Image (cartoon, rainbow, N blue to C red):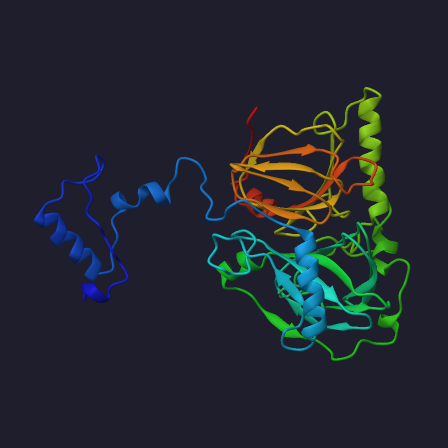
Length: 377
Ligand code: 1HN
């Protein structure tokens, strides 16, 4: 019966719609009963001229996130079932789901001194990025990987992983995953792991085995099998990222170019095996904008989440503009123009540049031949 049908068709007097007559109304009730929807009422929504995102631009302040994560640390235990003390960003227009964008999950995770986050694996591709603190290590496939400020740790789907805080201090970091995308695929799997890590896995090495094998610039180990999917390098240390950005800007200063645009250096985290993105569904980059510089507005298909790693400035995404400072996160929905200005903030004591960590779903869009960028200026 049409009263029960989820299909609702409204005959309207718009110029591109058929004339509203009793016969048209009867036709539409017939469509509803048979669960049919004609293209002519839907085409504008189904096939927009330009991308339209269901997500909206939004910013979260790190201070508020951290305060609430600290409270969760006091109140909420971490263990089997919940698995992680992770608190996700919910885009205001995505129905209250823990989705930062239609494809990306972003969360603050918090681990108290001595705590373990239990071992498990899942098909979702993930990474960690550390904006402050140190002393947690993550064990990925039996390889303990230390986590320190500025480090980026990709972890491709179906790898066993657990985290441990070996210090006397709580530690927070951000997790990015492709959970909303995989939710849409209806192809996810999850498996709990061992209840205890081995003694060897509970040591804190300076460098993981993966870094010793894969972490040498431009050098591929010949004896190592080509791992798949995702990067075999489990940590991209801040020291190298920082030096790459510093060198780019110095080269530009000396007239050799190398930056994205004047005053804007950027690097992409790449798989050392073949130079591809670090994860099948997630691209990650670090951008540095020198103080006083402003980036040209750019649109891109697919969505991104940014975290301010250092410095302060003003970010403009479509009609939204926010002041941002260390740790703040913001989302850039598909095809919304983004520009960034680096400015001294009230509480800054840094050297002056605005450092932005960014992750996006670009590899998915590239694989589907849907990836486009456009400079608006
Ligand atoms: C997960 O395994 C982690 O390993 C973080 O740190 C966030 C969100 C949903 C499902 C699994 C982690 C997660 C997650």
